[in-house]
Length: 83
Image 1: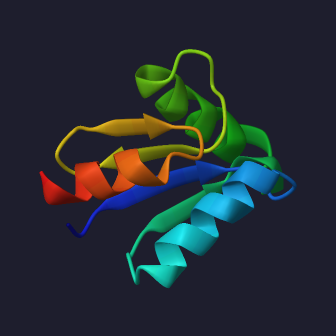
Image 2 (image 1 turned 30 degrees about the horizontal axis):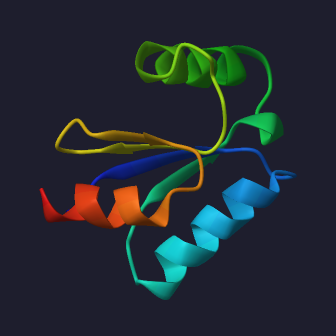
C-alpha cells in the first residue's frame, strides 16, 4: 500500500501514537498536520477530511483502497494494510 493520507494535529497524543505505530511498522504515509496550516490550505484540508470523517476528528487515516480509520486503532490499521 503506497498512498496513505494521515490527518493529524501536532498536539494530539493519539496522533503521536498513530505516527509511532506507522513508523515502527515502516509504513509510508503523507501526514497533514491540520493545525499547522492556515488560510485556504487549512480550509481545503478540513474539507477533504470532512468528506470521509464528517466529525473531523483526529487522527484520521485514508488508505488508497478507500478504507478509513478514525482514531488510534492499530488493529484496524493492520487490517486495512492487508486489503
